Amino acid sequence: MSEPVRTAEVIAVGSELLGSTRVDTNSLFLSDCLASLGIELRAKTVVGDSRREVADHFRRALDRVDLVIFTGGLGPTDDDVTREAVADVLGIGLIEQPAIIERLRERFARRGLQMPDVNRKQALLLDGGQILENPNGTAPGQMFARGRQLVLLFPGPPRELKPMMQTVMTTVLASRVSRERLFRRTLFVVGRGESHVEEVAQPIYSTWLNASPPIETTILAAPGQVELHLVLRSADAVEANRILDAARDRLVAAFAGDVFSTDGRSMEEIVGALLAERSLTIAAAESCTGGLMMSRLTDVPGSSAYVVGGAVVYSNELKTSLAGVARDLIAAHGAVSEPVAVALAEGIKSRTGASIGVGITGIAGPTGGTPAKPVGTTCIAVIAPDGAAQVRTFALFGTRGMVKFWASQYAMNMVRRLLVSADAAR
Image (tube, rainbow, N blue to C red; front, side, top):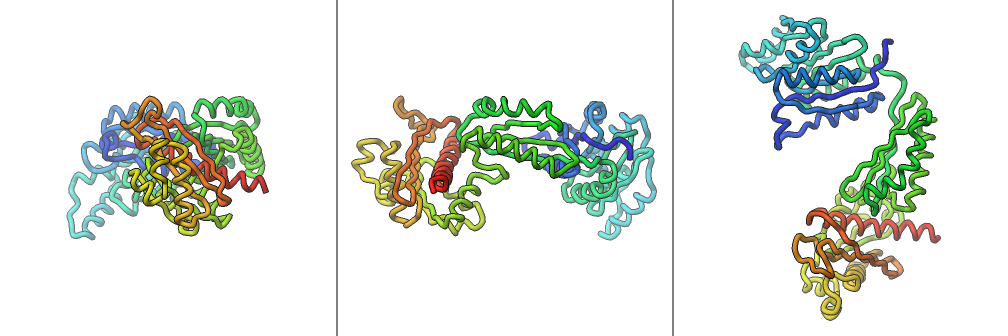
């Protein structure tokens, strides 16, 4: 086998992808395909229907990766320029393939149509290239080998590209990759900002960079959490998994309980699993989150086993009538206060019979804040099965939607910590 393919770049061609109505989803699919073969995706690019621009991006890709994959630009119209741009850079011609023209004519004839002459463009093959059959469309794909490098041209529609890529994976690429594969671990951290996560993680992951094999670490801020992604390349699956498990465990210990997921599951999935394992149920009285916590929990299949229900108690009147919060308590402390949050949690727990009650009240903004209680002030209470109460006030930032999401995330995290600490206390 020649030098194996280790790195790749995806170039999505289509001016429509540069607007706000179309999204390049093909690159996400291709990322997974490449990772499964141990091929590192170095870059993803979207470029408009410009022959010069496509050629420029292709030229740069050839300088840095082993495999270049094009999606789109293989249709019959003048703005389909991928074939021509690739030929320009490679310094080769395009040769019309009579067999492809005949297949296109037959395809149109089966639908009672005559093939437009413009479709002949789809029969132009890179000189020295190879056709990749497309059973689901009129545009065949192409493959061209340039020394150790490989160029793949796929049509843009996902229903055409996906089966073609799967075929290429099991044939052409399977014979051109090494025994090495990419192994991964992901940790989700809640309750810490990106810089605080970096402060804890950097002294640890910096020691892995010069190890053999090295572990690459990426920190990513995401809604409601910070993610740590660990990647290791190895031909030895057993040893790779042992190294990554040890690295993961070291980080989990360093974050002292703030890592809520190490297997890619969301907060709602983690909390749901903890409740189900313990045969416990949950209900929530939500004000500023408008039912978002219950919505997220019930997004998980099987959540009827542990979600009893809840109430959206946006007005003070409903805080009293649905969750039993005393009017004088609201008058004395304000709707956004720890005593009211505790009363909401106790009331919904009592009225629904749930094992755990949650109360959430806050100021989502952008108006409604005061100097004493600015926008983002959120009080969350959790009542344990034995009636013990935990309550915290959070200062949340961002848009109204962000405040609501963070509040639901912190509420579920309080439930998670309650359940985990109860296990530790046994």
